Image (cartoon, rainbow, N blue to C red; front, side, top):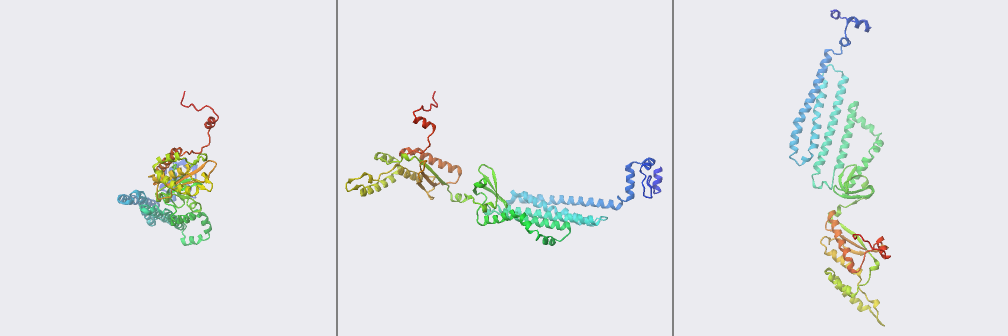
Length: 455
């Protein structure tokens, strides 16, 4: 009762109307709680007056309207676009299309907030300006992200073309995205500080040296990307080899700053794009395009087994059908030579006679064998040659190309060729060079032989 009477008279218990609060005694006299007293004080200050309540309610309604518009826009655009993309060749890139549509739909609520905040009454002008600046900055950021998605979508569409592997544009797309977001950042800063973007651009001239330092790697990568593409040096799917960077495998991605190489052990090496211009690397693409892979391996012949062939040995080699044309031509050549040079004034001189050798006949056999092999390419270089003798034997090198570039088939063909040559070598009285092992030394000294497998 007492509280009601005092309130009706326009007085608040415990409050000195000259501006002094009597905290302790007034609370005890009136029996009011701290919450009741706080509410009365707020009401006197006018914080929750009718104007503020109306402005707050309108503001909440504006944000609810913006959220509803965002939800409705996505419902009306995203799903129809998904169904449309599913019918096009870009169906595998539906995620990029959805991201583009979602970013564009976010512009609608931002525009509602931008236009609606200005018509709400009783709001301070400073608050309206801040909200509008944030809304404009959000619109610029959303449009920049949408434009970035559009560039990615354009790259996805380009990769569907057959020539995309040889001329990728991913690096240029990344440059475009950097330019878009740089421009967006400039506009956002200009909007938030309330200045013209031209003023900000004029200030960038002084910071050009700093920007060149910051974007040094980007500039180098851009120049390298242009050179790689113009010279057709690397494509996606190429097998490249860079031992200095531990890269040996297929190129799986070409970006602005890095080129990813999947090595044969299934690890991935990221090679800086500029490194492919400043350092050397090997590209095996032309080998694959040619359709054959080179075999270049030597047999180390024990030089102590190299000798002339006797008549019986020579006749025994006629059993090799592929060797008969060589033997016939060689016999004709040797007979003509010996008829001219095998006699001197004093009589016969055997030292002047030419005779076939086992190493020369074996070399002719290897050449004939490779020419008859169905998996050895006849359109490429085909050589069987001797290299300089070394302390490890006489190298007899086989140089030819297979008819396939597949790794497994290439190794199988190479293995079959050398399996046969190693097995047929003793037929010509030749032996491979091999460092002596402990068992060889034991046998040469008359020691016991190995009894492995016996009791």
